[in-house]
View 1 (cartoon, rainbow, N blue to C red):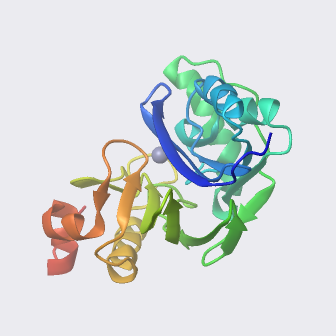
View 2 (cartoon, rainbow, N blue to C red):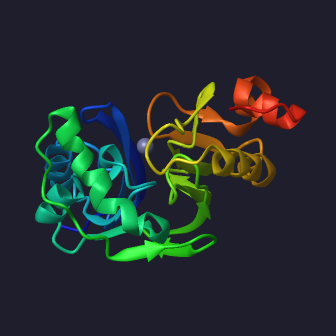
Length: 230
Ligand SMILES: [Zn+2]
């Protein structure tokens, strides 16, 4: 049977801290972003029945609730490659082990195959993906930006921002290895670089747009007025 190699987009809220896990790209070469819970195993099995195969796993940052179940995905999809910012390298195992503090037994730790860096272009899943390094929440936090994001017949601008920005708020900077000064610079950078019509998909909570955050997010409003945010 010939499987139509069309583009798709789906998401699920998973894991111990309600992480948004996004799956998109071409059905024959799908990308899973932020495998943050044990539900990924079931998701991958369901997708496989629809002819969708995960070939790439991208984490917006190295916190366990965004990457630690990559090993379960790789068990099912043996050829899947894991992508993480090179700036998370030295903290990666530590983040993984945080689960013990949450009373969770950590799954097997998956080793990233590709350590990406700022401004790198990833040509995967039939998409041109741009990495924007936005440290602050963690040293390697990155925005995964797709200018021509294809979802069925629609083409839109999409930014997967992890825990950098949320609808009406921004990511925490009180974790080990967080840096408030870097966070401010990263927020300034995305205000500058992302157009108003970019759809924002955060690591937790609802989606939004760059325009509504510039107009209503108290942190982004303060930055635009030159008022300190932390
Ligand atoms: Zn985080």
